[in-house]
Length: 465
Ligand code: MN
Ligand code: MN
Image (tube, rainbow, N blue to C red; front, side, top):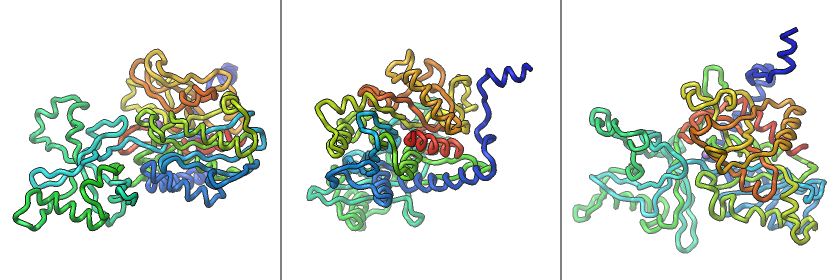
């Protein structure tokens, strides 16, 4: 009797894996193989965009700029300066009855090269770096790093760089002090132990064979770079070169249940939403997938979500479906629904002290919805309406998707934010909804294959409502 009452009234806390049979587990593992492959081929925003363009075109998506007129079922994309992309399938409903938007980001914390990066010291050649996003600097020393990005010459010629990923490539690394001589360093705080100006990438050591010149190692390096890429030292000034971990994403655990890899914030949500969109055909509400840039540094700039480029994309859809009239864009946003699909901080039992176990998400327990983010007294939070959370719960329960409603960490321990508030400010109903991870923002983040699959199912179901 009492057991029945408990069953009826208490929230169930069953681990996600216990809710799937062997066949479903195989399906989850197969889906994760695709995810792991994506993590390895799309480590930067530009690589993600190139991949998305290719796959989207294979699935019948066309560049919206090349389309005159749009009808329900039409699939289009818009690429913003090779660093962010929006995709849409036109629904059978008018757009003014609301879009169903899922927005994630394809930039991840990393180290960028400074505009004049190359220098020589004591017959070593180095690249100076400037970190991008919230990194714990000590985590970026003594690991293999690869260099990704572009160098653009004044004549417009663009050179794509990707070195350190292939087994036959060299890799690069940032050195750290040996413990034997680190007495003073070890007394510093973790934040101060490795200084930003010491995050210098070791890139070479062989001097140019000319006894009359100085900076022989630097010169040898420039000579190699000139032969390989046709560049001179000045060309670094118009480059975007990003250092990311060179190691591969892998399955983690004897039971094969988890994924370890760089950039899961926010590839976990970008890959799952994009993959779901590629499987959609006809939708009622126009389905929109946002893959944004610059989230990790505040969403500013013309490729960040704060820019008006997204409004322009939606206006173009309205123009080309023939729906547009003055001020319609505002109405479209006010009637739209969105999932801000970004990762959440899963409870890490080793650091249990920062978590509220009754209100934080657990890795392996399904998709995590954060009603609000922000810090301290919900400062800067986009707080989803109870009505919208209820709508989401109904959608998830109807589709038998495992979910958890959570916030990040204990109150007053820290905080964070996503692109949620940007769309919410336009009038869209938005809730944060993504995959819980461990070691977020580190070179090797951890997620559960179960949650990756539930994220994919959530996004697909959201668009199919
Ligand atoms: Mn994120
Ligand atoms: Mn992040």
